[in-house]
Image (cartoon, rainbow, N blue to C red; front, side, top):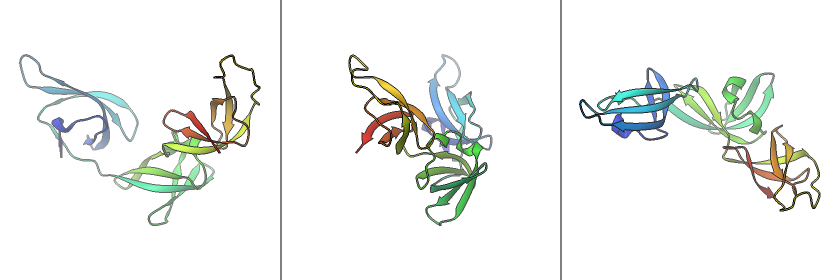
Length: 187
């Protein structure tokens, strides 16, 4: 059980029989009356964010969450198939679970699936991924005055992002999946 004194950014609690993640919280001590906590929480099932106020004495159970490592295998129509890395069972997920990870789906890459009460609720890509540049315009020396120019590049997963001018088709680049940014070219 968590009390409101345990609240911190990223804490996951069970509220109204659904898992929530604390995004922000603020302790309020009014001149009269008891202390209370104003929080901004995200429903982990629906993704909706709302604000809630709690008394300082309230307690919340820990949600039944589990994380599993899975490798992406293939897609079949609107189902995406993964292989559980512990027991080698095949797991099929629909597009609703994969909205944030679709631009990073690459065969044989390992992803993290979050389960609530035994049901998958979200998939998270690795923090950094190595992806091949499939299409980009050639960078020409002298295109920029300071040498800090960028150009769009289409990667093997279909993701389009800005890369430096020296990146060519066929190059392998490292991408930060948190903010969809180019990190470096891999030799």
